Image 1 (cartoon, helix red, strand yellow):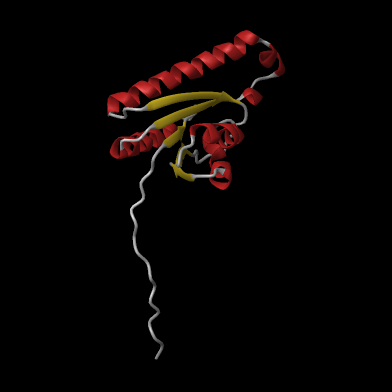
Image 2: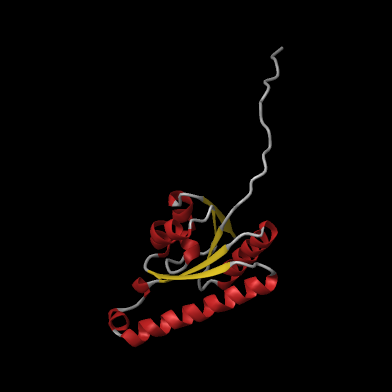
Length: 154
């Protein structure tokens, strides 16, 4: 008869200090991730950063050389961020920061946004069908390289 092995495990409460939600054009996964992020930020009463990335690699050569096209897309993303900020505040999140950046979403979030904003949890959506143009497709990159915890919401 073998002896039962004893595990010395105690459950400890985890408390986050600052959250970052990555949103993109995939409204289904972004909405679910946003709902989750707002719920946590409100429950913990902590700051929430909302980041969206203008993927300059999505633009063709003509578009990328046209300042009007790039600026127009930047303005669209900024307007969308404003809506997310307003909705978070209406939900009861008191401290909300919009963050707009450009480049490859996974790389920019890991190398620029996280060091600057310093969240201890990043939340992002994930599409079930792969597409190189959405932050959700960068979820595995974030989970692998982010220096903090990452939650992927579907």
